[in-house]
Length: 161
Image 1: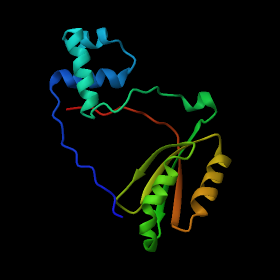
Image 2 (image 1 turned 90 degrees about the vertical axis):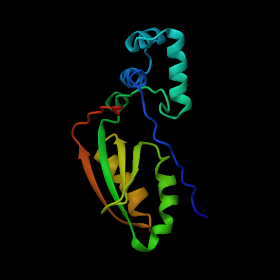
Image 3 (image 1 turned 135 degrees about the horizontal axis):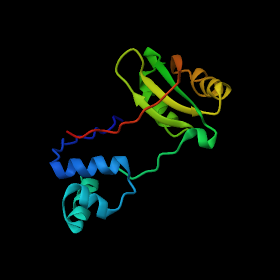
């Protein structure tokens, strides 16, 4: 059965929405009072605007950023995965199984020479090797993998225009 494609209308953000989105990305725990002050609007208006951003799917969650090193997962790896040409029908199952695995931080489905990039958080290189051998090399749909270790990572969020 074919997957249902989500069609999303691109939202245009006004200046207040852009300020609120930027402030929430910088600190999702900031108070409504500070958000309202930053945007130059009343607190009651701010509550409505943030609710609108959430209901329209622009803000999809409020989360804490965790330092992987602080929890013993200081090694970050990006693993490129190519699926065998004859195994294209296995892409949805592969995607669904990998994305819920512990230590998989992000999963990207790509167009290009690789089909996926997996962002993995690991204890050490042995942990990365075990993940690749147990979950990728052992998978008959996988044609090849390429692993790169991350030296530094910088997150900027999405800058609304």
